[in-house]
Image (tube, rainbow, N blue to C red; front, side):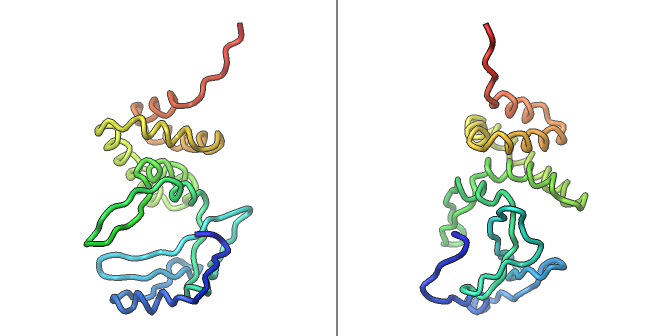
Length: 179
């Protein structure tokens, strides 16, 4: 979603989701809105740019405010389509999602959220490796800037899984050898 959002007409997301039995909920102490249903919740996120902001990002064209999230484009750059209950939904490719979790875990303050992010990353990366998709992990890892690769490796080194660490390290470009 481009920021700032440009729409020709205003869309009242809370009203639309309200028709589907979603209720508004204000997440966290900052007042980020999310829509909650007994079976799932919908959060509104926008990419965090520059120094970032520590308050909700207003999206008046949608009738909501959103939370800014660093590295969000990493999740939206490589999506897959899945069908859920007759709806086709775009979701981040599992490799992108898992590597994003390794970065985000380092930015968390709460130990339980850190552990949850790391566990999700390991489970997804292991499943991809078991399915023979190590090449996809390598390709996604190589696609991000060097600075992000270092953050991913730093996160991987805290999970104590040599298979994942070696896969990522082997994916890094090797410095040219002097003759």
